[in-house]
Image 1: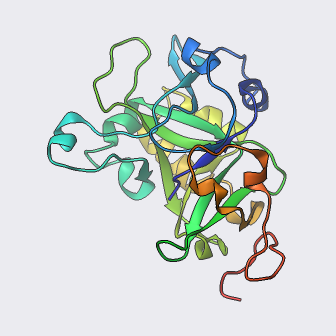
Image 2: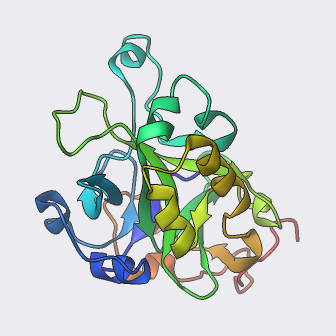
Length: 241
């Protein structure tokens, strides 16, 4: 699962890590960094669909074609790697719409409804993350209602499953550039996402303020550790203790 991300750096900080020039759409240039970016908004997204040159764009997080809306199917915000490459719902996006969502980390929640505890997950090195994503949006055409992107997820492992059993596929800079390559066959893109994702042991996770539950809040304190059950929260704290 990935239902909330942070993009608190500026676009230049992400593309520098990817060793790409900074090219931005007008929509992307008008956005501000955020410590609390939810689905339904338009986060920064990096694609290589404009004359083959990578560009930072602002695209709606969420996808639901008209026929799905008519059937009452909820908006999708994630796509399971187990089905995204071959299933009818996402395959066209996997073939022709592989993109990156730059981020600094993401939030997950544990506990029962009404008592949800948010957790923040980021790389131990604090490097930017590049989340594998797919989209049906094309910058050179008018896009139908319900267009947007979804983040590709895989099974969590190495302890991260205590926070959630799914996590976004995070790629290192070199693999991230390759993921965007429109000439990369879909089968090789699937193998890349499955085998080259940054492993769980390279991440830290810890409980954070419930202030993050309010979508309108966006402040640096949202990603700071908080005490949980009277104890000092530490990275990789096991929920079963």
